[in-house]
View 1 (cartoon, rainbow, N blue to C red):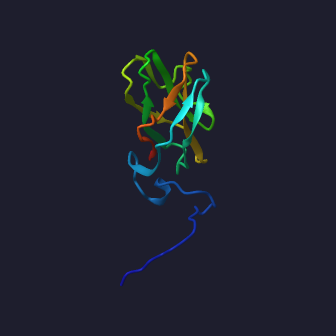
View 2 (cartoon, helix red, strand yellow):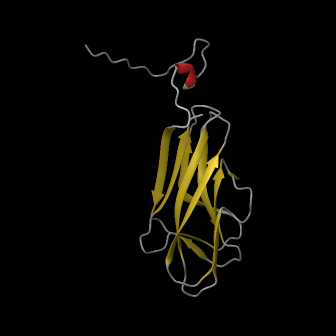
View 3 (tube, one colour):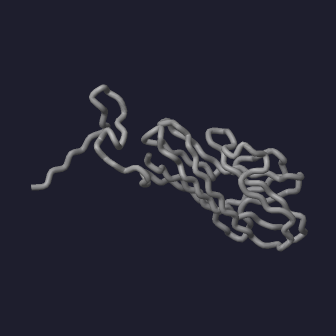
Length: 166
């Protein structure tokens, strides 16, 4: 005989939110959840301040305050053939640059190829919360030159967040 139990929420005896370990699940170091977004939309900026890429935002709610969030992003940047192209790209957590650096997490300098370049970013975040977190890709021009995020060629940029259980 097969049984199915369906519930809306599970709470500890004290009424709190259970962790994997309090439920007898030993899952440290395993991926608890994965969320991701992608875009083919072209964005441009000549701003020297970080500008949000509006459709490259995702939210994740860690199940434990000791969980880590493993972020991976493959960002496509259009290189104008005129040369001297520069860009800075980074990830913000709840409106704050998690890199803490105005240079960003990834950069391109003086590429004159006129091609599309894919820039990987990887970051292991320790947000220490069980509240929902919003991560978003931001980019900027270091010198006021217009740059593009996703070139007109139909490129795709991706962004994922994975909860690593602790």
